[in-house]
Length: 203
Image 1 (cartoon, rainbow, N blue to C red):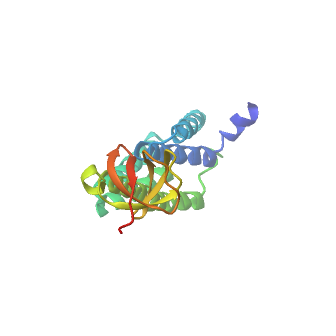
Image 2 (cartoon, rainbow, N blue to C red):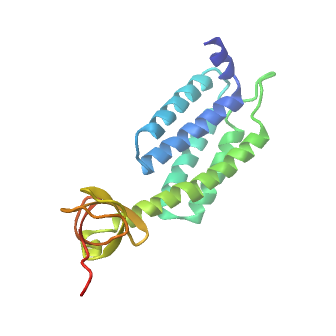
Image 3 (spheres, rainbow, N blue to C red):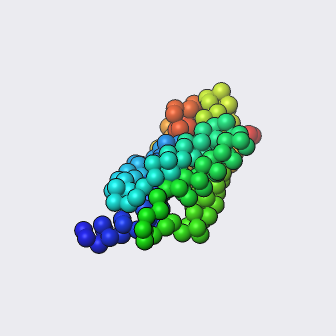
């Protein structure tokens, strides 16, 4: 335990935990899954808060970093260059002013601030936005758009298997056993499960 408290007395470690916790929480908000992201975010934020209580923190710095996270998240929806720039500036300023200079107190590494800023831009600009685009495309699939289409069985359906429809893999069910490689037609859609039937070869 003493080793953990010593580690949390390092402002660079606390800063990484704070950034990782906030960004992981943002990812969990937009890409819900098994709960792993939520757990990681909670652990990082609890440790970050514990470390912040032991260091000469500038509240303005914390507010600026949190504001940067909020602007990044909002920017994923509105896609505004102004928000992107504002989030980046807020993150850098918040990082610079996060800890008050005290006699002999260690300071944040400028390289760490630069690295965190670059990774943050990459994280929000590429990873999360790509995941959100994928979710939006998936949400547009309705019974009207998919029923009647044909797909190729990729794993045998007996009675559940998988079917490739266009470029996506779907869980499929059928009233009969269908081998991999056979062509099927989608007859109904129930959630993310497609009901299919074998396409009979024309005589």
